[in-house]
Length: 105
Image (cartoon, rainbow, N blue to C red; front, top):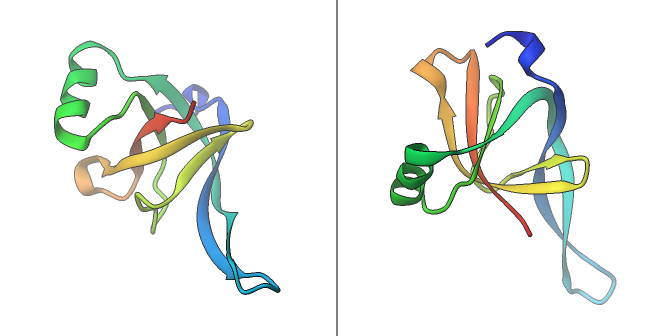
């Protein structure tokens, strides 16, 4: 993928749980990695396949390979949040990943 197509600066965030002074669990999202990426809607046939295979996915985020990204993380782009539904390591070459995501309303 050409670098010029990656025009969105994103943060991949992971959740951590901590106990507050009362002993209650509190979720905190911290940045796991940041990268330039392309964000595009999943259309037509791909959309229906994504729903059949991966649950719901309406957005694809393409970025350089980042080790350790999981479905328990999310993508944050200027306050727009995307839940990661599936992580695809393109051609298993550790050069590019596609994150199939569902945008939060």
